Image (cartoon, rainbow, N blue to C red; front, top):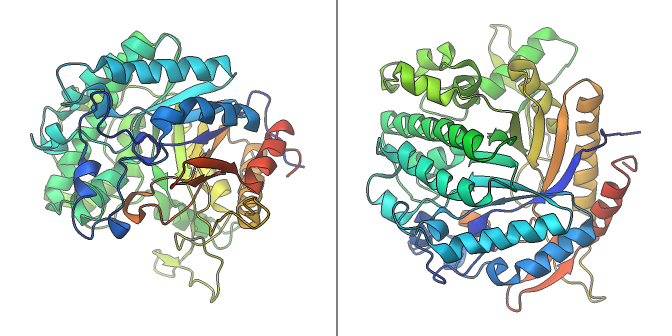
Length: 451
């Protein structure tokens, strides 16, 4: 029987641009996604986050639904340009007031706020000043962090600095299929990554000072390697290499992002692969990046089975014909929620929180008025059983935050993917809890013993 510790964080997750809407209200400035959504062909059917789930106006209803769910944790992000419309400079009081009221409502409902400072909505004004390529970008982020922490740090005690930096750097700055849509040289991509890590370290320092007793984490997106034969040390090593090692012209290897934070240095393996493209890092910068964190948040949706080849390299297992897939075309392999936490704990020795995990499904309102999503229930049960297995094997797993609480704007897919426990009718903004909502409520009540 699966079992989680008392005090386990059972919750849900969202992001500001994906749910808030009110893109031009109460002083909010534009972000790179506002720009990108207006690029022809960039986003499915030209969808935008202008209205999204209208959470900016409907937050009280949404908090009431979270309370009905029984969630004791809610991960959300602050919109940088809602607080600082130009990214730097004058503070927008109405923007801060929104998050102030949201935090108070969450606490009154018995829900702990888990706040992500940056979930991809980079201020457009700062992008026009060079964005993450500008050496001043860490200072911009630090100033933004200070504004938020001064207002909310007395009540918010769980902070995450950056969400999936390898995604907004790789997808947004190298491949061009996410905002801002750039295709930079790889040395520029590496420089941007270096600046984001400095920014995270500076933000962590500020949070320590302004939010006493807080816990701070970072949140990478992880598709962990899964050993084909878990009993074979060579296959286990191949799984670790699939997860952490660098490959040419790619920043998907996790060690590049987490080694500097935990160990204070970039991984030798990655430096060897990237060669002269790597940015010059000063000792002071590396000390800032290595500001100690309290946990690692893992966004995990799938994994990749690998084995060791005869020459010592890793061999990807061929995907079986007809393998189960989500609407994101991601293979369903629940072992990812065992091996992901296990590999990160073994390498870094930091407590683990699953900050995102969920399924994009084919959801609609049935003739009986309900939204029936048995695949999401099965997916979540499978993954939580594996997470419990990791905990039973000694991995300090502190929480599970399901993605997502609401159907929402799924980046370049627009509104063509539904991840929510709550169905959103975008034409009316009516919320309809899905069958998975009720199942997850029962799981929270049982602390996972029903899995």
